[in-house]
Length: 126
Image 1 (tube, rainbow, N blue to C red):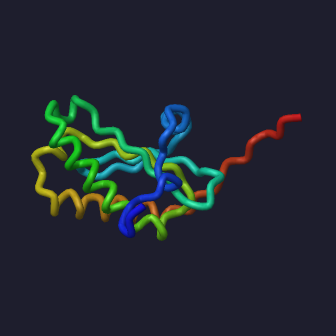
Image 2 (tube, rainbow, N blue to C red; image 1 turned 180 degrees about the horizontal axis):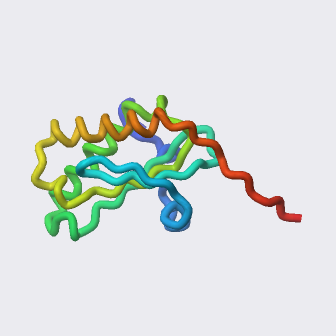
Image 3 (tube, rainbow, N blue to C red; image 1 turned 60 degrees about the horizontal axis):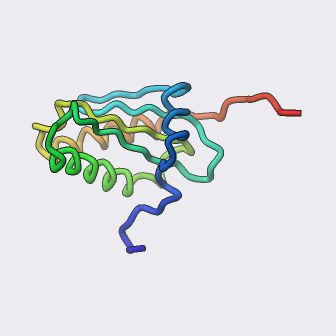
């Protein structure tokens, strides 16, 4: 793995993880992105991305947005609380300059880092 890559442990990979986030998560939004997050039991935060074909029919546009989100997250993930994050791009992100998207993401990470996230209390299985 490269020096500047994002390890698998810092990403949401399974469909079940995405489904769990969709059901019980809180939300933070900025102009071009919506972040759904939920506390996790991991020692680090994890990122999942959703950039649908409704955002853009062109894969090159969707991939550009995902690259920007991934790179922005890689720089700030050590400052974030231990949460699972599902980043959902809005269709307005396609026609926006990369610098503006980076600024928007920086605002979102600041909002998320400022939260005091505590894991929920569940019931023990017996």
